[in-house]
Image (cartoon, rainbow, N blue to C red):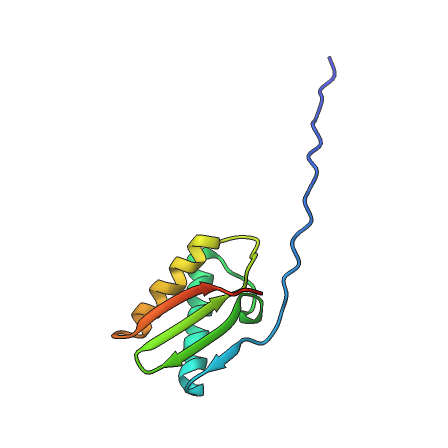
Length: 104
């Protein structure tokens, strides 16, 4: 006769650590890449946070790019890494691209 509605506890949203990423290389090119990555990740995986929440470092050297993503992001894990890698491969042809999870 009475309808029971189960109560589901909500988990607190993980706290994102915001900090300026370490950028090494040509400043104009780095800024272009960070902006392009932000737009790509927003479009492809729904990332809404600023780069300071997910990007720990981007290092550019001739023929090589290394991107470090913040550890413990509450969503998008593999999708975010794959989308970032694909975006950098498109933006930096003939460049070895490495996408890693930062240690902290």
